[in-house]
Image 1 (cartoon, one colour):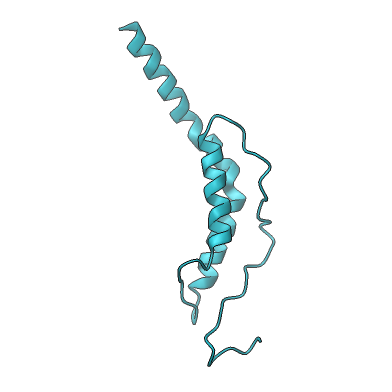
Image 2: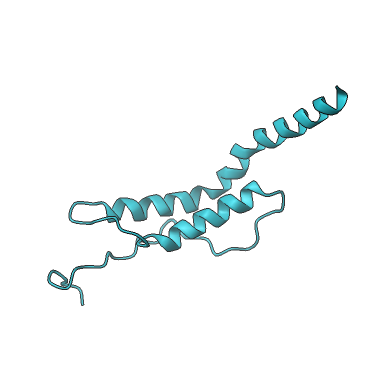
Length: 96
């Protein structure tokens, strides 16, 4: 039974550290959320790959936070950076 207890303690320790590790991804989550919000604003349509850059930054941050190794120096998305402009339809585009 002591071996089972040791395994359980390791699992509990790792589970307890998840919120702390994911807290490091706040900037990436905020940038992705802003991109999705801008894409779904009135007149905007959320489509595949519109926020792929922000999603990949968030995904790599979460993957690095979940692993035991510290995250590599990945390019962070600046939360003050405005979201990229939405692609417009050929008939309604005014910002060419």
